[in-house]
Image (tube, rainbow over all chains, first blue to last red; front, side, top):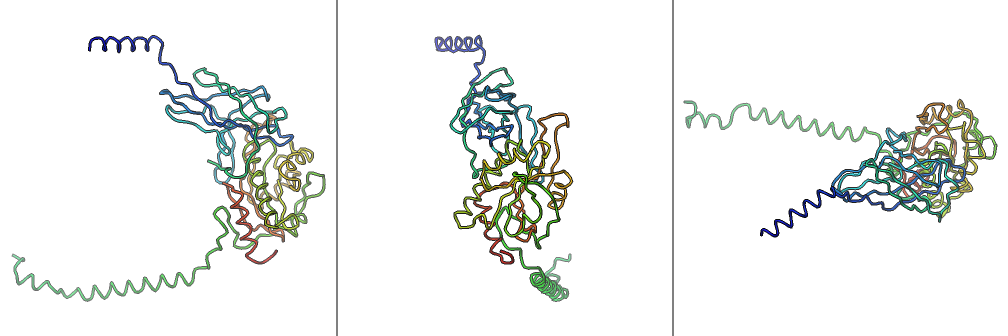
Length: 149
Length: 226
């Protein structure tokens, strides 16, 4: 009994000393919609999964495949589509956040000739300073399953 | 006290009961008669043309307008005559909604073509409400990416407004004038124009290719112009 208590105390102390290790946010289903030729912006979509106990938030992104990346959200209000910059996308603890057609998305400004079959490196930046790199394939945009939220 | 057997037996059939029952029956009969009248007088329900489609009770003839297509040819009222047109308003710098809707229309085009409804009967027109940035050259590259038969058109703001005001299409810049990467708010619906160049139906967001193709077939089969 005493030994088990000591082990528990040690484990607790060790955990405290190392700080609560933040469980990493993972990225699923990242893809870039192939932009039509001449289009000055491409859209990137992905799902962020937060297995940890602390809230996380995506605040910025970058890519060598374009001039800059902006975070936006489309909303359709009274039949009018409005796209607005998004300051941060919250990923709740134990939950997920989706960047998807008709919703939140990455906007890749002046993409450099992205074609289906290529892969784009995305760097995702979180509010806590963490940076995550992900490879996103360029895919053709499908007509079905397109929805607005 | 009141509650004696005598008082009780006196209340068993109070004099107001038959009158009350009669009034209730009359009211009920009137209500039923009124409801039946309403059903007869009400106009026939609008035909079901699918969940996302709103059919106008009477098609509305479009006004004259003068735009230019992606090849520099005039795009005016005559270009909307003789076949059904799917009109969508947007801009090529739009990365999410516009390519999403055009991908839907690409699939609608394919589904209708598979059903034997081709270019002689339908056309798909992307109208740019961003003439400052969307030159005919840029529109040509953009729309032909979705389908070689797709039409791109734009023009002077006052000519665009003749069309958008009539159709109830909203469009407005949402960033300051000085920003070269300004965004535009714009109506997300696709408008269906009949072969007499009249607004026939509004196809609302969210768009599904199969639903739109199905709505179109239903609207076309309602008779009138073909």
